[in-house]
Length: 162
Image (tube, rainbow, N blue to C red):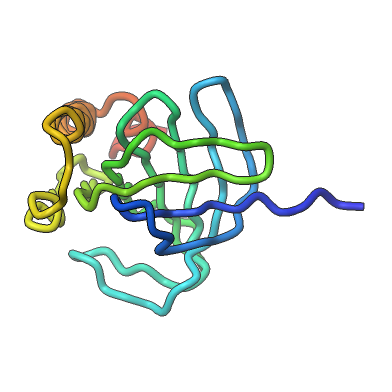
C-alpha cells in the first residue's frame, strides 16, 4: 500500500485557501522541506518565461524563513527556466501536508541572475502588522542579494556552472 499523497495548501495572507496540489517529498530537515510538483495550469507567458502544464517544480519551503523558492524545469526538455520565489509566512509542515500563507510579493529570477519583483502593489494593499511587513521586505532583500551573487538556492543553475 502506497502512502497517501503529500498535499501543499497555499493560502492568501488572510488565511483563505487559494490553491491545493499534490507533491512528492524529496528532502526534509527540521527547518525545511524540498518537494517535487508539476505545474497544473494552462500554458502562460510569464514575464518572458513560458510556464507549461507539466513543468517540473522543485519547491523549497522553510519553517524559519519568510519565503519559499521554486526551481522550474521544462516539461519536455527538462531545461532549467529559472526560479519563482514567494514572500510568505514561514510554512507549517505536517507529515502529509504543508500549509503556506502567501503575502502576494514575489521575485522571479532568471538563470543569469536577473530578477523582477512582482505584485508590489498587491503586497502594499494587504493588511499586515508593521512587523510582518518588515519581515517580508527583509525576505525580499535577502532573496535579491542571494540571486545577484548566485548564492544559496540560486547557486546551482548559473551560466558557466555545472
